[in-house]
Image (cartoon, rainbow, N blue to C red; front, side, top):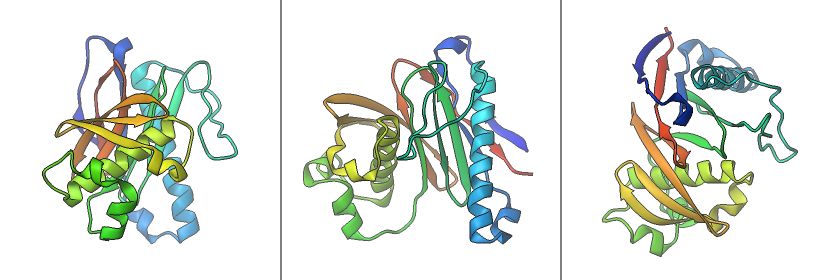
Length: 203
């Protein structure tokens, strides 16, 4: 693998290091079941790299019955895996990460993802905005330990700029930073920490 983006910080203890790995073409030749297992392992590798950058020793990675990752030694973790990219991140605070490829989708899905007040926060209802909303809500729901059934309870309340927005969920404001790359968008929960994104491309 070759690093195409890897920023360093002088304040490592205040930094969150989300890691995104591309999926090699060879994985596409696997059967569906084998591919799912491979992507899961590949996402764990992204998590391992995030832990190395953060200076955290990975403990046993256990999930609750609903699939939510259980923290270990006060450390929270989250992974995501999609056909072309996977991601992983670890932090000393509630964390959630999601990646999606920006692609066509139905108007019905727009309505299920956000209500009129949320769409009114922006000048457009473009696909880019849709996936900003979708991935940010996914990231918050992961950090909150719930699933997509709570999507309607997770509301965008402010679009700060082209890479940041704020969500209200369970009477708490969640700050989300977003990163665009190769036709995809990644969303990550952000508190007071600085975020340094890393992308590793498969050789």
